[in-house]
Image (tube, rainbow, N blue to C red; front, side, top):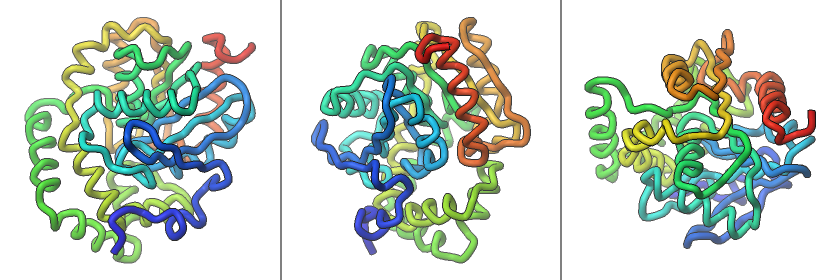
Length: 294
């Protein structure tokens, strides 16, 4: 059983494969997809996913942007770093952008990727004109969940059998599709489910996801949030079962210059359910903020 997904196996039919490249930065080999022309747009996927989650969105955005979409550290086809903590991931991504010699004019993050995007801006690692969050996991879990969630992830991460148990379960027919719908509130296409199955069957990918969860501390991000000065668009499906829409409502209330759009009938994977709708919203935000011409 492969520890990490193999490009010549799992990646053989990877979405937008022609746009893929492998880059060495910060001691890691990264899988990155780049396409299109225009201002640079950085896409950061969420925990457990990879570049396949932008399969419908990226080609549409590439009509007006140079799209840069990496697999996050430890995810998909990118190597796993020593630290999966939020500041370390932000630093590694900045090193990748330096090697690629690109400066994002706009950054879009989904779920935990939104937290990475905001951390990069707050730490001065990127200086985009605009930012967007899709179902952003931007605030700590409320109440006792803030204590239990990282602790449980740590227990699973240090148990060497846990990734194998997860991957064994992912091999059951229909299990991944049911898991995605139950945990996210989204129903995505067959191609999307297939690629999640490929990732969830990889112990290396699952182990990295658990490591990221075990090191996920959003308290500093919440503390620093008031200093976020980039125009922020918050997109959130009203059926999101992973991150409640109240999180984006709370962030919007704390950042007077932000905009919140609640998306009816969509779940946590809204960008995979309705890519055209999400792209329309992102183009409108880019024009409003001057990233794209009106």
